[in-house]
Image (cartoon, rainbow, N blue to C red; front, side, top):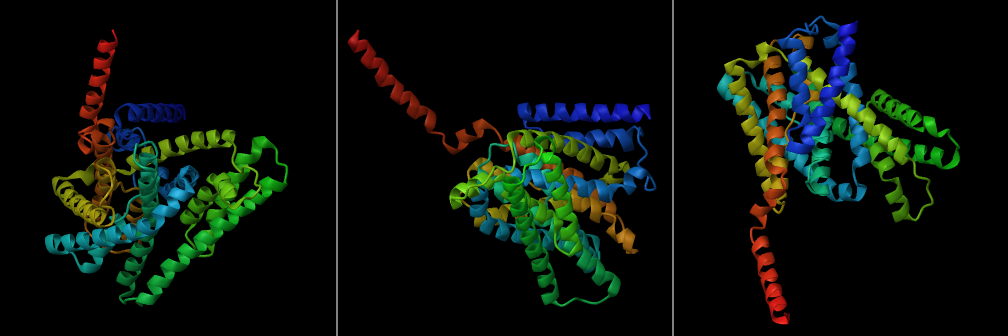
Amino acid sequence: MVPEFFIIALTIIIGFLASVLFEKTRISQVIILMLFGFLLGPVLGFLDVSPESIIVSMLPFIATLALIVLLFDGGLELNIFALARAIPKSILYTFLVFLFSVSLITALMVLLMGWPVSHSLLLGAAVGGTSSAVVIAMVERTGTRKGTKSLLTVESTMTDALCIITAVIIAEIITANHLPEAGFVVSLLLSQFTIAIMFGLLAAFLWIFIIDRVTIVQEYTYMLMLSLVFGLYAVTEFVKGNGAIAVFVFGVIIGNARRIAHFAKLDWENPISRTTRLFQEEVTFFVRTFFFTYIGLLLSLDYFSVSIIALTMGILALVTISRYAVQKVLLPRLPLRDQGIVVSMMPRGLAVAVLATLPLTLGIDIPNFQEIAFSVLLFSNIVATLGIFVYDREDIEKYEHPTVKPKEEKEKKPKKGKKKKKD
């Protein structure tokens, strides 16, 4: 028991040091924590990460818990007006990037590996979208515009759902040997998103009503709100909506309650105090630290053979092409910093971790499916980390505005001349 508590303490310290390192160097804490988990489990063997272990069996619970907390936190931090401006392009950008990524990955697996189209589509769906838990953690402290952060947050939130829904539908097609109607697929997606948005809005306005009219002991406000968040996720999933999006919508409304009240000229109490926000930051740090360390524990040395890594690089190259092409068409006027981060912000996470074992669970024999999926998970996070390291720098603006410095120097010279004349 003692070694386990030491590992918990060490994980928190590593998480803190990783956050400090990110502030100084822009090396993402996500990749540091994943590599730390990889070192703890598969490399050094301090923790049992065999397929029958408790750690592996807890994946669905831990992944869902992390998703709820991190999406709620991401919603709280978003400016709703910046989000509203970004939503139309974000939705179009999300669907186009997902569609192109899945199509190109499918073509690669069919032509290069000789996989059946259905198996190739399943892999494309599993690794075709970014992870909200990872993206939110990565972009929240970057110097990108608010609109760009909103775009990436909306994309990652939607693709979590898109990946899981699409992969499950494809898996059902493989096992049942028949195609569903296109209308059924579209109605399934629309119903999930509509139910999620409606439930998220209802829960947010219910919480604002409670805070505004009922006196609650201040010390327990956050815990009550967190219980509402967990309950919202559970109820939304129970009625066949998307719980993750419902939680995200709830966070956006609660985090922007003051702005909404001012805009609509309503007399609302602030539903989330400064103390509550600080406590939320602590909880988010704790969950994020252990979640990404946990993802590292699930990796295996067997996943990184030369052939798997080469195939992973090919998949990530196609994803980069998809993101670059869509960004150039839809967002041609983005600053250089934002362009680079949008293209490189491709980290995979929760959806890949969950869907990697889907074929095995359903008895579908696809060689190296899990190995490829987890390899893409790790290396996509490395690409995103490198993107932040390269593009999220103050001196990147010199390449966008190279004439700023000479102008300042020209303005200073006449001032010096005037001083000499006065003397």
